[in-house]
Image (cartoon, rainbow, N blue to C red; front, side, top):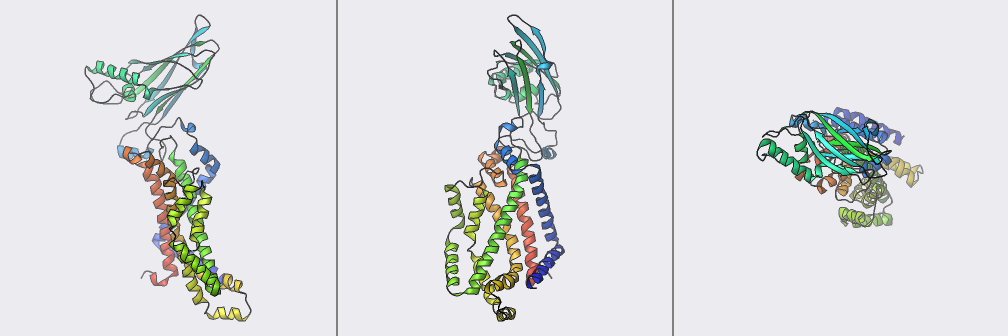
Length: 461
């Protein structure tokens, strides 16, 4: 009967939550985070998420440090997206030469209608040859200006040509602009600007159709494929990091990790403290003295430095971190608070009645005392969740978290390690921080409302 009564009380507490507007807001945010977590787990399984986050080669076609697409609202101009164009061996026109050689010619075309310059340009080759082919590359602008880029002798089947790092090409483009303008331009002519800017004193993007012509000298029977990637400056809803990884993966998977870590840590610590405190207050004597001495020793130990020390010494994952947090927190002040409540409840008439009809100590503890105390501990348990969420993020930020999982704290750590704020990549820090704050606000609002419900003295007039 006592258990059913307490269960009914819990249900009434949950229904009363909806009477508080800020609790409704907190629940709405929490529901959003739960849906986000389910979406992440269903669409990107944990093994796949870890693989995607730790494999840089997968994202070689993504722009580096690209901002989210929504930043266009603030710039009020159309920022470039990544353009990928490829040419296959079957599309090449081939002419036979002497000594079993052939000359293959192919053209790549694309339209560029953005208001800013690309961030980087790379050509990826995929060839199979008996002798290293020679590739001559020409760039044809919308104003019909033809620019000779480079003559390459491919050394690998998966060779690459980084146009943005070609200083000879950059110098040639500077000379071209000086000849066209009759003076040194007022702006710095990088490879991207030299290929995409109009010949004018003011830096402007030349929009229109661009062509890239490949002339390949190779042996008959060899094949040649090429893919040009013109990297943009925006990508997706969350942008990319220094390794070209979409931050969407970490933002999505950060939600289930943060929520589960906070809830599991808070609920288990509250439950274990409740049981230990109840045993201490009920049995008293030697058991009580031993438990209280352990609590007093544990409270003077520095929690965070101890956790940092364990994380530094041992290579640990998220589960070991969770176990360490729980182990360091079970003998806390909450145990003493529960002990005081138990000593008061032990004098209640229904406890005396339970003793009279022969109820065992364990029955009294788990069926009469704990159900009486548990509802009053739920607000504190919910309010403690943000603390553990920030604890996990803090350890990840210090480089002491799980080395494999993509978490919000890990994203912030990568951002600061690579000078995100100094370089102007504010999204890299703001987005994971916003998710952390949103999670904290959600549980804090719910915890505040629950506190007012279980403690009538705090109810609003």
